[in-house]
Image (cartoon, rainbow, N blue to C red; front, side):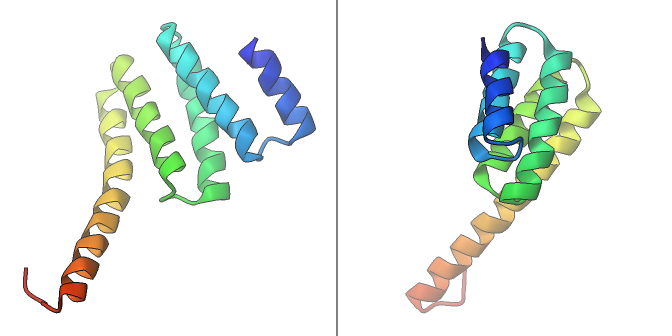
Length: 113
């Protein structure tokens, strides 16, 4: 059923519409939960590429897809690739966190941590 919905959404809204790749992401999660990790990985890679292009590499939805891809790779035993994807997720998150901390410190009027 999800595949049919995705096909209709791709035809009607286009492959790069946020609702379409959100549905593809959910289908990939369902496939992973069914143990179809190879299919899930392929779909997550496609969704990740579209989300990077449309939303940007640091958008939360892009990072969630990257995280789910890492989980899928881990379940398949591809630990090296899993770590690479985790680093992809962690670096932007750490940059944003550091920027937030420095902004808070600056607002407090102190330049010391």
